[in-house]
Length: 93
Image: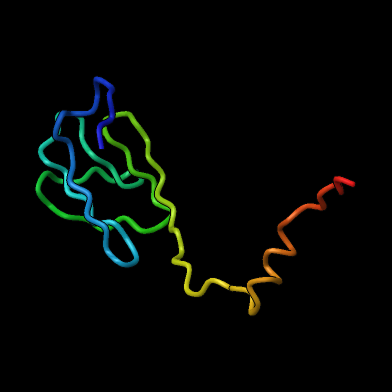
């Protein structure tokens, strides 16, 4: 991801997606990487949980958890699905 602002370094931080959180590592950036109010030490990985606020320089990024869709409901009869989605068409007689 590129954040085109002067306070964010060209190579600022490493973000790794885990099952329930992000692992954030500051890559010796000029203006720092923060999780909440805590400035990360360069090269030291830290966990950012859903709801955390990441700051790169002076640019904020919120983290939201997106749940996986476990099972999608499908109609039992294909004709039933079509009947529910089609609009009434005017007759041409």
